[in-house]
Image (cartoon, rainbow, N blue to C red; front, top):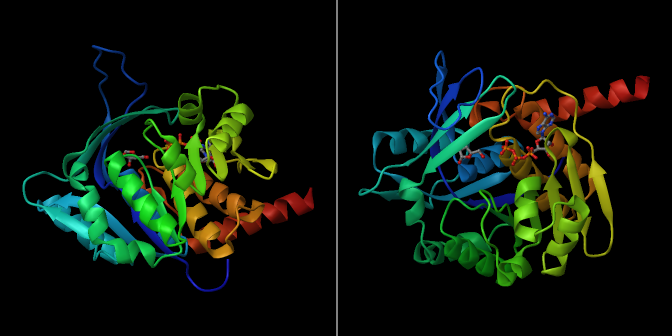
Length: 313
Ligand code: ATP
Ligand code: RIB
């Protein structure tokens, strides 16, 4: 992981997460008491931007937040993370995005998202930052901003020869045009099954390749990740064994970490995927989305420690 910091543009959502830690998830109509509350910075776009910055990327974040006090605090926070905020849009008429999250003792969660200002990141706003997008090594996008904006950004990046990493989460319809603009699609098993129409991981990945995606990475939770690409190569990358307490943001940490390694190495190889798997494993051992994202130093030392243990066996 030595060398120049790759330039990454993350184009996506910002939320504040209101988290409630409870013994078990409620059923419809049920109230669960004795929760422990935590407020944390979140949003799939912001989580991936922070992950990419902490894990060695030179990150610009294209997002939309309110002019509310939460928006002020977030802008300050992104600056402290070393993220370029020149393309952050402020909206006076809507609030910053808010997610309500309930997490149980096993680390399982349910989430509802109130997009607020995220819905205002229109194609027009994307076109206004065309030069920024065309000037990076890779763009990273998710599905908490309008789909039309994701496609506009993917087209600009593709035309400029910039790598396109797309994480269609929360799950959404993805058309063939967007598939063909995607260099790497990263998605979890549920998203892969819904988008491809197959519950079988390898089959789902093959169907996505057939629709035009160049590389597919399906994350498998505690089982790691599955990778395949058009030339027929495929691999399963096992996860690192850790005690998971809160998986919120694990997929985002994976995407942010992977983006840095991929933009640097210009290949989806085992080293990039192992780096992403390690960063995500660390993140599940801590509470909250952004508070749980590790630094590059912590991630590299975690990998060396595991390599030493494996060598001793
Ligand atoms: P989330 O929505 O909870 O943020 P996700 O559903 O998008 O995550 P997952 O497949 O659950 O994605 O997890 C992403 C990655 O995080 C996995 O590929 C794996 O590397 C790591 N991971 C998740 N859970 C665990 C775990 N229990 N132990 C170790 N690593 C884990
Ligand atoms: O992927 C986790 C994120 O999803 C949370 O931070 C929450 O804001 C929701 O967007």
